[in-house]
Length: 157
Image (cartoon, rainbow, N blue to C red; front, side):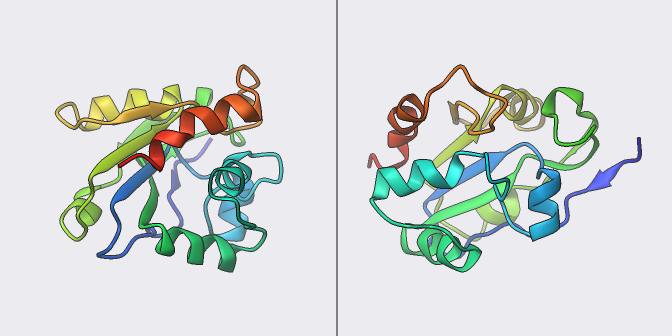
């Protein structure tokens, strides 16, 4: 297994207020060059329900994130990973989230899933954050309805 490097930039602008961090992009997301592009990942579906909108294309997803002041990135800059399975991550190096924190007024950091949270705590032990359940199809402990309830914290002021 070779070490993979995160293939795309953080998505944010100076108006971003909420930072959502995953672990590392899936194979499908790396192919599409944007976050949460696997058809079975429930990330975009959660936001469609929460914000009553449609987010079918990457262009629509980016416009939605900008309009709602949401930044997206991942905790890990490089790692070894088998397929898209977070449980196989090793040799992880941190993304430098100060790139976002120094250039946007982030009020809330949300980290998606136990593995991303484990690495976030390791890399940024002094940063406050909210752990949300992973939207991955591998996380079947949460129904879509449960995920929407948990992710509603994103809309709270």
